[in-house]
Image (cartoon, rainbow, N blue to C red; front, top):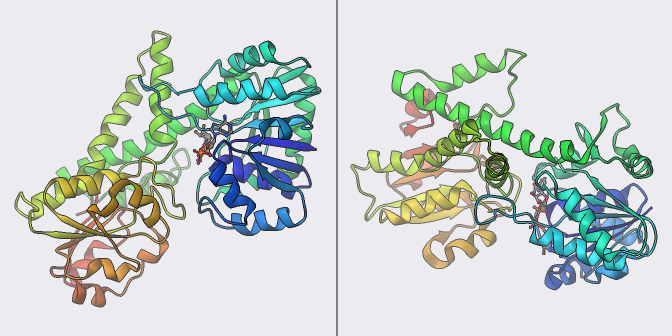
Length: 433
Ligand code: NAD
């Protein structure tokens, strides 16, 4: 099949590459000419494990190309994916300007019957809006499909190639057949393709993200209670997760959820509820807990150092919103570091890949360490903000020798409190004794 992907970000680039890898001819388009130029030159605009190699292979085998000319990509395509950003709008709703602008361009470029797919996370009713734009601009037949994406940054290829499920919202039999054919290589192990109407498909994505955010905030509340009553949240978590009705995923307390999806998607769902006269109180509480949680490390640091961080230097391990990505959007590290700086501390931070992205937020206001141990030299405390694998088994003696005082504020509970005490650290986790 010939496919055009509009928007070459984390989702568009992964989707385009995976569709190319299953034999399709794919053109990825973006309005960001620098990004496209970089990809055409063999460079990478983002970090995602395994993606660079797969792009290279499919470019070499001439199934994958990049361009800025939307009409040239859309004209010959049978399926066109809209994978542009849907950032938070002014009132918490999703800002659809990029989706609708893409739809406008697509409508003018259609040359024969084409399936236009909303891959971006979009509010209920967007497929209808896209169809309206296309109806105004297109001179050929088309169908609009809602096909939300569930990949996780850091494991995006695995998620795309072996999805738990594929959701396809459409009322058109013709579009359904084409989409089923396109996804067939990825659902060979009986993971289902779930067909439904566009509105249900659109809502599914928000409901799934809101549910995951809810689990995180719930456990953060349990962790806060553990600290009050002298319980250890890690025992509680393990025993809760063993219940098959609950399960283990997303029960880890920490410094709050971040990233380019959960914060904006929870807000957008609340906004959708409000638009329809429904106050989604549970999700508002989820957000409140998350705001509190993002401030927690600074609160703990202040308490430990007697109410002031002036003259203190804090090391930070981890800047990206989660491991194995360079994505800094709404990363908890932003709030942690701003909080530390605001209280007069100096900050030296290390992240395996997100240093460059972090510079855009902090510039020269913090120091960047190329290696983890460099972020420990002479510091009064270390804050662990992202649980990169390389932080899990460090040389604790070396750490102690480098730090001015051996204090660890562990925002991800990656160490054992008893062991850390034995080693001579002051160790403050989340909800631990
Ligand atoms: P992104 O910001 O990384 O990429 C979006 C790209 O679209 C940018 O490169 C931008 O330049 C481009 N763009 C904007 N308008 C355009 C236009 N008119 N024509 C061509 N290109 C245009 O965003 P992302 O993280 O890939 O997310 C895209 C969508 O997918 C969002 O709706 C997001 O909520 C959703 N989503 C993201 C993830 C994720 O993990 N990042 C997962 C699932 C769903």
